[in-house]
Amino acid sequence: MPNIDLLAEPQRQPWLEVRVTLDEPQPDLRHQVENALQGKAVRLVRIAAEYAGNRGADGEEDGSTLIELDQLTPQELFSRAWLDNYGNEVDEQTLKDFAELLQDVQLEGEQP
Image (cartoon, rainbow, N blue to C red; front, side, top):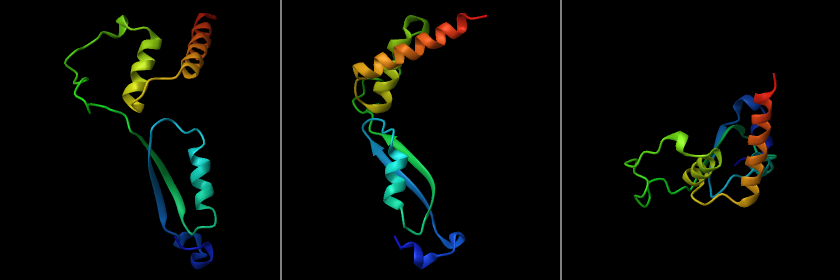
């Protein structure tokens, strides 16, 4: 990428979309990308994160077995969504964080 002084006028700088494939969420992804682009003559338009999940890769989840949502606990639903999106099991700390958020939401719903 050209250095910033080669295209000094911001409106002449090319737009850039960054696409990354991740195994798990990266909370500081934007910061990492912005640091890598610092001093470059580009305008960051979008960061698209795709996850290397195993959706349909092994043929196990083909949609032929339907499960009613009321048969799953919120934690089970969260764990299934995590596995589907990220391709690995959710870790214990994330499950604890989810349980805490769920409890907060349930308590808010009970207040008048």
